[in-house]
Image (cartoon, rainbow, N blue to C red; front, side, top):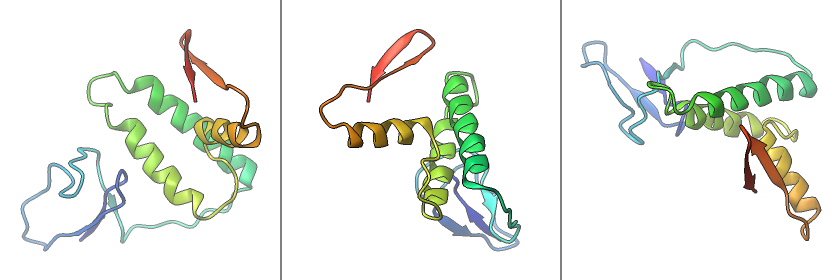
Length: 120
């Protein structure tokens, strides 16, 4: 079985009789790994992909302080990093804001989440 850590993208090969893993041997993530032998091909417009990714990253950030969800942003951003190699579209609000900051280098961009501002 070939397992992919959705956080660091490290591939771990397990023999059929191997002990089950409880964390990624590379980064220690406890998120459920992906089975590399179980893949799908999906066709979306860049806009549809952006919508799904932005919602997923916002949700992951919103639940990161909930028990058992601490790795959620790391997992989502690992997946987004992988997807970003396949498109030029910004797939998260974080990337959208970073692109905006790059286009307007003399400006300050502040993002507000739950009433708290963060300069990016």
